[in-house]
Image 1 (tube, rainbow, N blue to C red):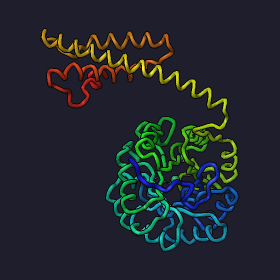
Image 2: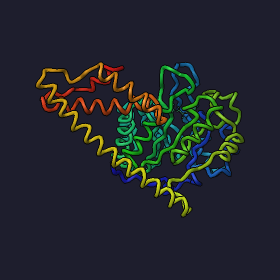
Image 3: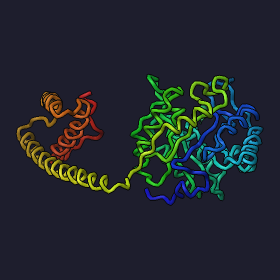
Length: 371
Ligand code: PEP
Ligand code: MN
């Protein structure tokens, strides 16, 4: 999808190698906001974040300080010269932020999941071009995420970014919100110009894990990070276990390494070119062989049809999978990889065998048959 989204470096916000959004989960008091921001002044922070209205799972939890907090953010901007941003969930929030000259807005995961709410926010933003980030919806649904981005784009916003904060799951094994990297990677493929930040704080739910997720995001060429920082995390009124101090944040940033997509070294360029050439040649062979394999599948389809034999043969499929997984081991290919690869190949072969007869499987029956 070709959208004319303004590149992050042209948003007019501080940007070093990567874009950083840093600050507490919630604004709790004027001192907490100013002290936390005070520890971040020299860090070229893209914007200082603090939630004013907090969407909490249970009523009675700390639900944010409300518009009062916008004045505190105003002091951070005017006295500490940091751009400031907060989460909006409805048109009243948008109106209050615009009145207080908040620099950046973001839409939270629960709101992105609700097209009515996103549309109401988009309508309230018509005629402005305030920078705005859209967090992924809580469910692993890329279309909802893209839909929300499109509603804001259609309202005229051009400084739009996305934030990957992980996806809610019933199995909370290691992470609070499972990263499911495939979804943000697919978002970048579908909407290549969208700036993408990673929010390791909400993915991890635990400060000990933040470094590894932040590094993974940089390895995947994300444009920046959103990290929750509190002057005293243990006394935080929300998300206490995942916040770090400004000092820990500075140390974290120093330890992270930034990767680039293209290197300057000539030796690297030469070698990568050679290796890519090898890969291209192998892919060419693979495609040719796959084409031939499918032609044979069609011949098998004709043969089965004339003999009134079923196209789908559970025993043969079991045998194919088991033997390919065993052979794959010799080449250091994991059983899971072989399963995914041959599911796709087998599914296509079945489709090609069925095609002549005119009957097509509606929705991938093979996958549920073999599970
Ligand atoms: C937040 O950023 O504090 C927040 C509520 O995040 P999310 O919408 O990702 O849960
Ligand atoms: Mn939070």
